[in-house]
Image (cartoon, rainbow, N blue to C red; front, side, top):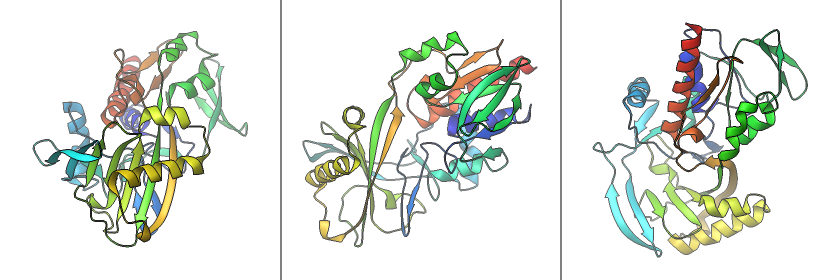
Length: 320
């Protein structure tokens, strides 16, 4: 129930009965929000810039309903621990976020879907040219005409590669990890930016979550590691990872430690992928099984949408 799967589901429900299974507690995938009352953090995807007409059209109704709002942040680039570039985001090149959190988008898109949460699919098997699905407790979850796997390639391989040799193309895709460090403060931080791209460090991104529309005014920082550093340390002790990224952040922006009231870390094992050049999704018309995800294109929100849209078109064409 990330954006790719939700996009496919919302397109296909006009043509079929659709069920969405999600192993997590809520929809949205990396469009995620961590709640630590009274603080909360967008600890996955930070924003998106719509570029294609299809995506602009798709998000239009959500903008009208206030589910998506523009983030006119003060953006900077930090090089050698000094601000080297500054720009104010605005209408000319809009940056959008979910409101009041990034998770609002997944909640909105799934509102009319048959969404089954906290259910991890463990096996697929062919029964009379249909697909029998079972969860990790070996419970029968039904028989389906079509299956779409909207998940990272390594998880697709674990679930279905033995069934379809055509999934060998997954070996060519390497996902990249990322750590998200969440910090909250009792007093306002004196930052001269809302969002920062950090260059030549083990940290790649720092943003003031409270600067986004409809957020709590309480000071919250969201800090992302680089993919390269996370790939090297994704299996390390999480307390050690958190302390390293915390101290590294302190070196870069020098915030007041005395007012720190919350510190937490989240690891995204499958956070990003380098730009790909191929199909936007995969669909086996004979077996009636497909795969979609942002990793077919690039590790971006719009890429997830485009992949989900592409797989839905392929399935609808076969149905019609």
